[in-house]
Length: 286
Image 1: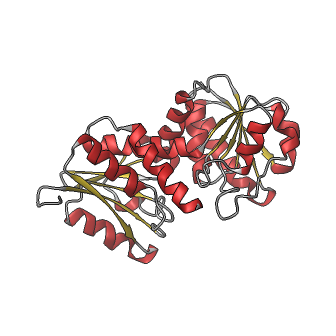
Image 2: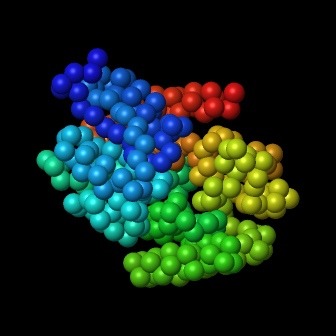
């Protein structure tokens, strides 16, 4: 029962109708008996500044930020976590006495998903596909934890990958290789882990994959950040080739769990959150 004492958390983005976050967080609040509720709000880009001030005025406890606002929201917040300042994107905001503090739990969520599967990035040769926001967060956290990185991207977007490499060189004095996507097959002959940090394979285009099935057996571990469907074509073909796989669902749940802990100060019930996300994805597929 929502009352005047209920603490409200939210999601802002465009679109938000198919987000897993409301189901995951409300199930987690219920599991722990917390007087919280989580609501999604559709916010158009031209209304972002007003929406953020509205959330502040309404004393919302915290909120998630999704596409297309993760970068545009930065100047609207009072304090940015150091990781956000490096990555340049926010997906979680905490309201601390009227001050809005921006965090990025995508990076930590990805890293925790790896650890959950017994994968430690240190000294691993990791190939990352793509150079968008997801790649930026993932590449940074991998470099921070000692990985040896190669980023591949389309020829016309290679400058984005070079920007990520420059950031990592500046902060960690690590050289990141940047290559065009047509070098993929040769590069994967020596890779320990492949990360698809693009949206290729996402529903409704789940028949697509960047990586030819015949070269998958060369790679010990494949991680896909796409979570809808849970098992992308890339992961299906990787499993068929005997490769260890990590689904984007694990990253989704972990980033949500880290946000939950920032808002509530309590350890998130991971299994509860994952079950709710799986239910929603099954309903969507059916």
